[in-house]
Length: 282
Image: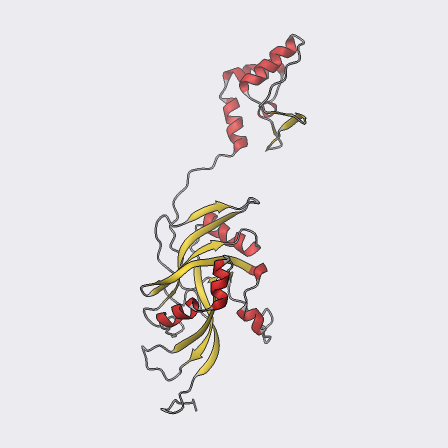
């Protein structure tokens, strides 16, 4: 028989909860693409992290003020946010082998190596808990999520990971979870809280023209370059500095870099015909 609560013995069940993701609305202009110091792209955007207008798809209902207050008064979360280190993972941590369990530390402390994003500037906005998300530019998970957003136009969703008490005898429509500790909001796929997705909109971008293609096009469109190439048996790739599809920058000495250009090539060839040494700078 299921346990029942009474006036003197209110039955509660302690639990560790990893909700399914929440999807949020799309707001134009909120996605910002940036580049890290080592050249990796990453994204910054606003996102809904959890919603409270009713029971979620797991039939759990949370009190918005309870969740917001737990986060607001959590010493660890506040310290992490001050240092921009409140991190989430790509998917909730789960054991790889059926029948095994994760340690309490693994469940309650996100793994830095598996970090996909960071959370900051969070707070309750109406019946939604929102925050700024920055994807991690240095981890495999963070780069993968950024690639999905930038290249595949994906809209990420988020799911809360927390510790709380279930109240099994709560009436339909009432709050049936009391949250004691919020660990983080992980990036996941299918929403249990409808509406907890990133507030981003993807716009069609112009066609990207790589530098090597632009250089070859410029040379091919120049009548002067065509004459130079034909007269001196020089290939288009030699003119543009392209070798096997890559742009090659020749270094003449420690002080000088040579960059192919129409005017300087004509001057160099002319100087060669008269036996004069003539170097040019970029």
